[in-house]
Length: 211
Ligand SMILES: C[S@@+](CC[C@H](N)C(=O)[O-])C[C@H]1O[C@@H](n2cnc3c(N)ncnc32)[C@H](O)[C@@H]1O
Image (cartoon, rainbow, N blue to C red; front, side, top):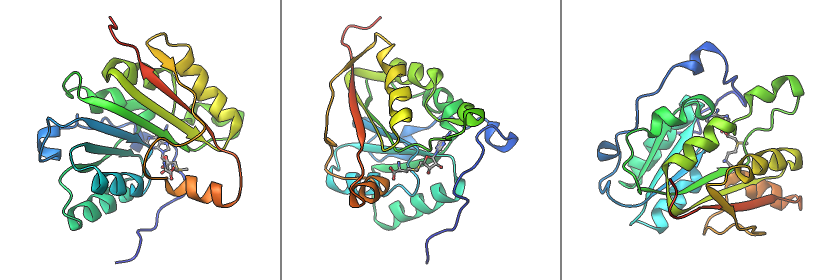
């Protein structure tokens, strides 16, 4: 079967994408739901998580994506690969991440990745950008103590905008990194690096003993 064809972008503020998702049921999504969880927000076709899930079977991997056909395709490929530690959810993460994660047990979410989100370049489209105050707050609330958030993009202004939101939240501590700390690169990351273009990256850690 060929790759499913989709629109390059969807407007996250249009009525269809304002619908609330069901909270993720990790007991149904993963064979071993007690294992630590990695969340990739804006995972597109989900290949980053597919490779990670193959490489690290003692972790669970949850991809979140707004383009629904990509989610269906990615779940089909995960099932065909026999991976029971990988699941993808259709969700507009700029509005509904909190709802999606609300039933995840405390301490389970260990790693969050946000990689090359769409920049929505025009000022009039800034409200469509995926990473906003609400998302940062949701991540801070659910991330386990010492859990990590890795953020990377090739668009400098977007990097600064996203980094500033995390830096302003004192539940996080920044540990700058020039390299991707994971075993796998995303599709966009490979494309950008193949062109020799710079990537702006950083890592945040959830402080211990948060209130
Ligand atoms: C440029 S692609 C990068 C995909 C992948 N992370 C990579 O690095 O190759 C950005 C992805 O984020 C998704 N996305 C954008 N806004 C989103 C939102 N509000 N909620 C969930 N996914 C979103 C897009 O549909 C797209 O698949």
